[in-house]
Image 1 (cartoon, rainbow, N blue to C red):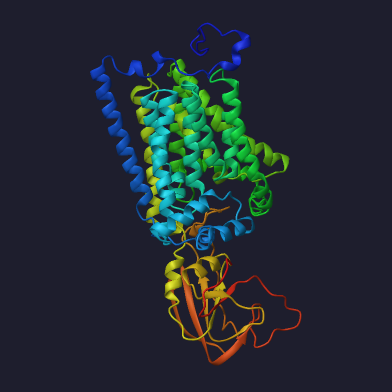
Image 2 (cartoon, one colour):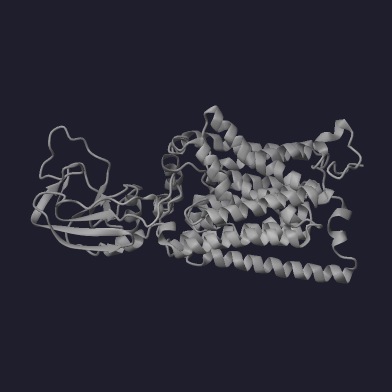
Length: 546
């Protein structure tokens, strides 16, 4: 009999040490002890379903509320551009514009044709995936341990600020979390009830996760190894399921290799900073909304959960936590090893698939049978800290994405070609071009315009260091121009909208300007074209992705 070493019971034989924490829960450890009679168990099941339904409703409220209030930032604008073309052109453009597999984009392509290409229409795919992750987290905790652990895991997932943020973004991260959670749940179910059907379902969910994000492999790999080490079902079924998932992974390698150079900015942030961000952002999301108080409260609560797991959990609950940790920890640790070795793509969103298994680890402490009110209080501390961050983000524009739709609308109609000069980050151009279908890069030979609209980013109320998630606090302000951007133009109006100042300059006659500074009637010798930081309004929709 294998029992917990923490309680001073009989030690397992040395040759069986590796199985500690990785055996499926015995029936007496799980549901049979939660109710003394069929009637009591039925009432408990109804109460559990009611609580789970409330958590799902809360998750839906947090994810769908204000879904279209923020504009598309650069990464989302790329998604919006890609899904506007045909599937064949989308697949052809993907290796040149993205660093992710194609499944999310193909699903989004069909999704916008049903629900529209607005912020709400496109982001609702991620919001739905985020809501569905909540019951899957419950099922994973329930399959590993008890209903209490399942509900605690579902609660942590429902209010987690990082998951709420990516459930409101037109990118693949919410979808990969859903598929990774499905893979983890089916892995747990396969170990508890090892049947060929369960194994085939695990292989299917794992393949979907791999086709959504390359880093899903770091979650699937430990699952596959643990399944191969199991005794049931037959070896042929286990090898076949793992081989099928491996074949999907191998098919993704050529595209991953072609896309390998699309994230050079990751390595510019110190590795230590990124590790600190992973811990911080897994707990309470992105700064500055996630202030020090929220981090401290959530950190203390999670530490308490681990303490209760060690001191108050029974052997089945500790085995559940150990199994979840055996999946969640390598999902972060393996990319870290690669980063140290020189293959560095480590940041929070690339290892976001680890969140559900790690939430189950904490939930096993919060929901331990002998944790009692202390476990409930610690979980409520995490929930309160998380909700405070989500509410703060919703209330402060500096913590949100830029409102570039408002800026594009404020440019107003034009009867003749005009230049739009971005006196800010050039990445804003992609979003503006999506919102204004008549906007495009100025041609190398310049263009004759009688109007130049200068878009200047205003200083943010708060700032955030090493920001890569698209919030307004990342983009610093620019000082106003000391004069017209080109000779012959004079200022006619200036107003502020969406965190920008729009200064409008006009000339008495059309003047040719060029896509490099200074914007003279003819280019000076020796000037090379600058970053494409100004755009030309023309009457035709651009033909391809910028």
